[in-house]
Image (cartoon, rainbow, N blue to C red; front, side):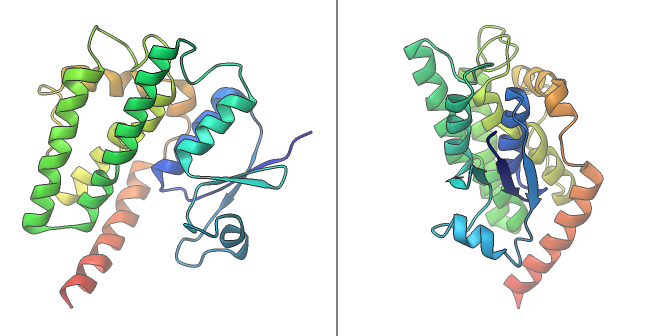
Length: 223
């Protein structure tokens, strides 16, 4: 029987991408929490290039980068597919996943900036949300791919959960439901899926840790 291990960090949206995919596929795994301020020798061994989480270990074979891991999981367990079978629909899904990979770092950048720099990042985030509202969720779709959750929904998890938490403690208001009705409906639908709802990081715990990290980060920048 294949042994599957996941090296992750509880606050990372990229880690949750993999957790949700594994659970949607019904793949049992061992979770190993990494201290990113003191990375383990195993993490450095399995991801010597980027030295980042998540890393999936499948029978001692490492797979790195969350999107690559999602594609791998989908291929080794074809049941409950995370990508469409139709070539064009699949290409469209991969386009939006690439868009998510390119734009999601903006959300964490909100946390690391302040003043004019933060306002510029907030503007970019707003523009990203506009693109999703106007182009990705048209046609009354429940999820990005239709009636079932797929890899595109998982890829945009930062928008669904992390953005709101970061807005709260940073005193920002980027996502307003009345401005993004389609996106707001998608967030509610996404977070209602049992696998997602039951495996989200605790908001209060996130706020405490992010606030502490942000204070340290901004203090180091000003010194």
